[in-house]
Amino acid sequence: MVTAIVAILVLVVLFAVIVAIAKDPGPQPEDVAVAYEVAWDKLDFESLYTLAGSELRDGLDRHQFIVAKKAAYAEQRALSGLADRVGVDDSATAGNAAIVATRVELHDGGVVCNRVDLARRNGRWEVVGYRLAPTDAGGPPPGS
Image 1 (cartoon, rainbow, N blue to C red):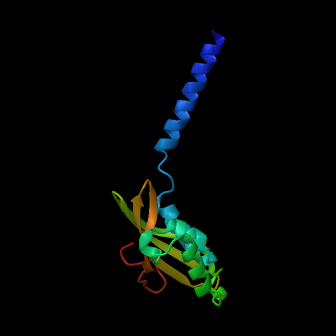
Image 2: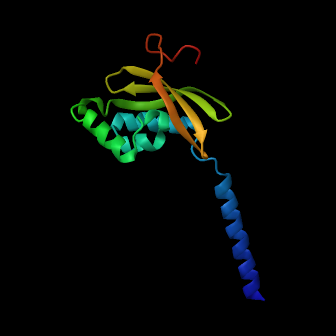
Image 3: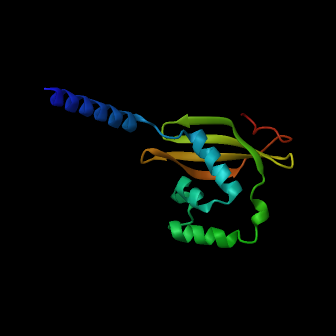
């Protein structure tokens, strides 16, 4: 009798854990956008590939992408480690699409604002577009 009760309790707990995991939405678009900015700052091409949708992978598989990016940036190490702080100025989500305005504060006091477009595919957010956002004297993008 005790064994049956323990078995039932174990099954109930297991079921509750499975349901909790299944309902977890994972990282939000803002989290993915910040991670993408940080990966670019570190020239972490493995993470960039993971966070990017097919639109930003240049038609390459993971290995080809990483090799190509490492070769392209081999002489550009000065472009890494420039960010002091990465944050979100604004974001908007509609269904399976999101736009995040990021703000990268640089060690030298400069500020770069970017627009990160994301799509939710296969249960996770992917970066599908990335471009410099217009700024007004170092402030956030217009409309944010």
